[in-house]
Image (cartoon, rainbow over all chains, first blue to last red; front, top):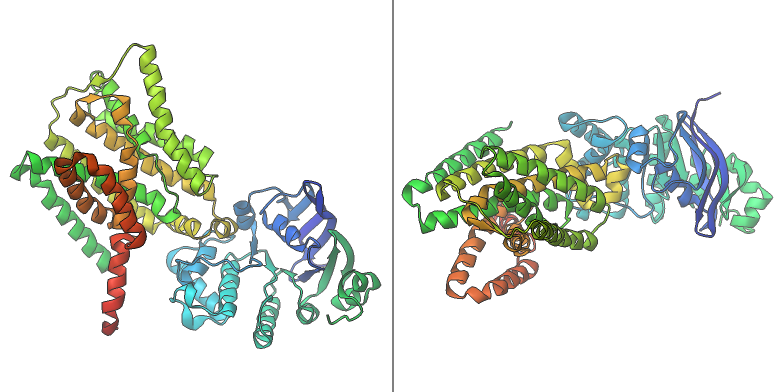
Length: 244
Length: 308
């Protein structure tokens, strides 16, 4: 049995009267790629935001390697080993590409500084396919390259768990394939990843397991093939055509 | 240290050495302008240490500066003179820390307004205490000459440059740049953003208070309305932005022309100084968004391309 890295137990988030996430529980084990899927507004991003510490849950427990992280400030959670990308790409516009990645290395889970941080950032930029554009301003990057920089920055934290919030959204078909291949290679590296995603091809080919959310609740959990053929999931999310 | 850094260090030390000789050349009008420049150099440079990378515009300089002048005002008869700037620095850092913890969770315009209010708050507090004790202003009669003040300020400027240089190379300096770019990213990358901001705000608060303590003897008579005059905060902001906050030397490039112009206008048209402030602000916004530093970078970009 693989080691559980992240435990989510009975987590609920209320915004005033709205229950965005309702009594969610799931585990993420080491080297696993877990997909969180569900229709728009089902609470996936809220879940990611609670794990990364953007805001605290209203109730419930989130444990990273056995330590409670729920309600801790985001920088503490990042230091403890959770790194993330954002649904709308967030780069540091006044910094160069490599400085953007060093930003992750300098303050994250395993801290590096100066030459060591730069070498590590270079390795990661090579890793995500940006070896040639290290010293350019980020404003000159194409869309997929901004996503690559953000991914490299998150990897630079050397996280225990990597949260990718719709990292593949907005890519054209060619880029999408490149993106899927890139994330698959992370999986082969043995990273532990939580993937919030709408792209069904990506979910099928990348995820070991999926948690399906609808209206804040977990309605299914299992392998992509199982959950995507689940009657309730089809009803809640996919309609008649499971490739929608 | 790289060769370039060593060269810059030597050049800076030589520049300081040269300007330190000024009192032997003139002890009158020119020294007086130079003292004002030295004062604004410290204030604007230390202001930019915090506000430059974070983009948080602080209008609290007058609060810290006034605090410093009052430390000297109250203490110069009973305490050794050398201890007064130190005490002012500690109090300034303390006040900045207190204010920082409360306000640095605010962002943008709320922070600006609060810092503007802070100078007024401290001024009213001092006035209130003075009214209760039946005091008005106070005389700071010392044997300190303009020359002594000038040298003290130069020493302080060197210290601020050194601290700024060290911070710029440190993790803290890098953290502040990240915060200024995107605070959300900073937090999720593991930066304790509140702590980083408060620390830097304390550095700039301490520097402003120390400058206040050093300058009190120059004013001879100090009272809350002049010591905490909000115009000082605005002058510092304008000068720093005019020079540009992207480089450590940037604010000085704003202090020198602005002080000369201010001096000229207050001699020939004393009622128009506010107009100068306004025009300088327009100039910065429309013509020099990155200050002199930004202009230099643009020119280098335009004319330096052939060289590559």
